[in-house]
Length: 120
Image 1 (cartoon, rainbow, N blue to C red):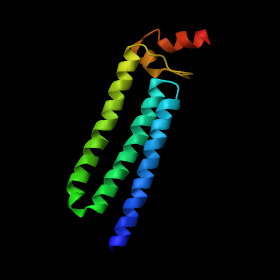
Image 2: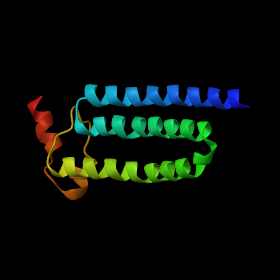
Image 3: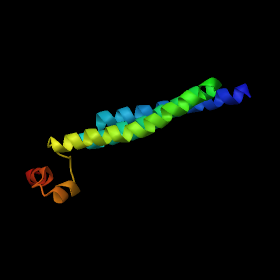
């Protein structure tokens, strides 16, 4: 039984590390703040959740703490990403190669998107 737990923990650590590395690679390689938030937020959360699962499997007394941390992470990560994206949009940081801007039409702005598309 201990070998199965060790195998599950190793697989979860390797997968979580892979997701974290892909998230950081996306953070450095993607062109604008909005796509970087997607890479860092979504992929990074999967990496941390898998690492917490590995910790909980390896130390059985840590299931309660791990589940609480996973729950808090799943609640706070999307809220944080949304707040940063909203602040970036309100500051006027343009999207790279944007196809459409639903917020500009909904709020009646002349929009940063149309101005940046005209420059291309």
